Image (cartoon, rainbow, N blue to C red; front, side):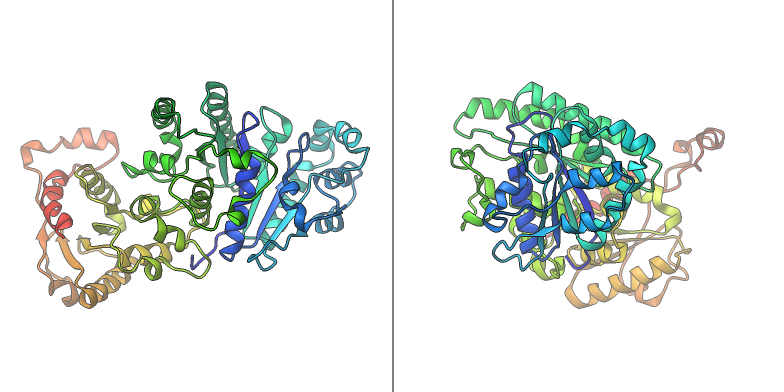
Length: 477
């Protein structure tokens, strides 16, 4: 990716035994190998073990961790020194010092005693733990592109810190049984509500549901649970990629199969798997890592060209470079800001007819550089439909100049759509044969009193008819 947006990602499971820590560590290695600076934090204080996956690089390490940071808070002391000491670089091959780990704490004989005296209510009510936690989070994001949090299972104070206060993205893992599934759904919904109530400038929490330990040899059970997955979980994916087929497609792409080999010991598939097969743990983890690296954006591209999508996740790679030979969008929709409602309706009508549409409001995520997202989509679109009302602002004018240059350079179809005639439009646009948007007959227009009561003006453009005009052009190969 050309631009890196720093994020905190929590890996959570309602029940144990789902491969949560394994997935987190594998994803961390992929991200670090792709050029991102990654910190893994073991916040599963009651059942720690994240660092075991990195034993080969942390032998005899007795560094402090989360528990020691909490102790400084309890003593009203500064955690600057201890939190810096707690970050330990692990020199996993091909990561070039970009991967670091923070343990749950020192593992002496008194670990359990020190854990049991942590008074969470006192820390938050009297010791400003909320403010300190936010400051710690900010320091992490100054140093790292990704902070991956390993959370405790079930309902708990620590779990709420990990699923509400810390993350931008919550990866919730579950196995194919109702306890695990329903617990994951309940915590995901509660976390979304909790983030919305935070007195912080934080974007809505995005949820990535991952079903794990799926036995591919049990065909009937696999089909049954895949259907169950696709019934109850797409709404979470729909929050960050609402394109019609994307939620179900993404959910199946990141299902983690059950492979007995990985059930023994703490081994990293990202290191031990040389060739990624279509039905492998490493493939699922790599796909999940690429989604996170790309900010959960353009997931529809993953479903069409998975290898190119993954390749484009690396730092310094841009989608035009990695996906140049392949067109990903049938139609790129440009519109004046005053016509957003009309553009959205048109995009939805085209999508219902099978057109892959780039509509900026569907693609942009909090923290994205919108110029880069639009530029990348322009390079991967077969056709540009440009809505013109004679009142285009400077942003659309700049966008039109870029689209014209691309159309002249590489045979992309540029279709001006006049909402009020072509008079006064720039010569660069008028060189392309355009469409005059069809109008709704007067007797089909809602009464002004009704539309005013609803808070929007009576429609003038027949969106359905316009979609029918654009449809054969968008699908033409």
